[in-house]
Image (tube, rainbow, N blue to C red; front, side):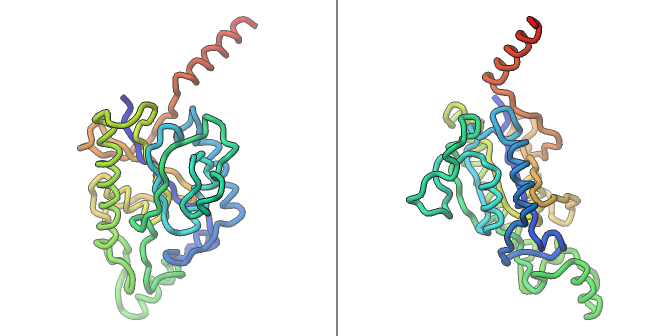
Length: 263
């Protein structure tokens, strides 16, 4: 039995992510380069013999923001049903996907992974925030410790991400470990969201306070969370996950090796 994983994926590049502006409730679209890079990530990491194996996915969670939803579309995971933000009468978003890029995983839009509400700091950079605070005599600023005036505190964010982590473990990972999921599905989960909320998600996955974070996550980046010793009580950051090689792929490799020896 494999150990179920949770893939966290940050949306692709936007004009504001390029400039360092805090982007919470502002729904800034991906840049052309951002879309191109996400497509490349999907080609490299999604597939039958890749890091993210569509048929092994149990559930996909995505932020309400368009930039995250567009990122999921561009990854081309191969969702069987139309995305929730599409017209329900439309055809599935990936009608040309082959069997290696196909999943029955349900897609859920959830506010639990919308970006940190930056409040008064929406649309400005960390450098500008620190300058404003210095001029107002407010001292230093650390979002993980101080949160955002007019927006969310670290405690607000913790409540949101902890609720989703609990759901993922109880509804998907724990059930897989107990043998309750259908054949061919390893209970893997995908979470597509934003930079700060996903860094918070990773910290809370391993039950650490947000103030201890030293993680960074590039636009369009992919991270992997899992468990030590196949134990739901031992959540861990998976620093170097291997690509999955299914039996079908193993047989293809063996056949290629045999043909190579005959030549």
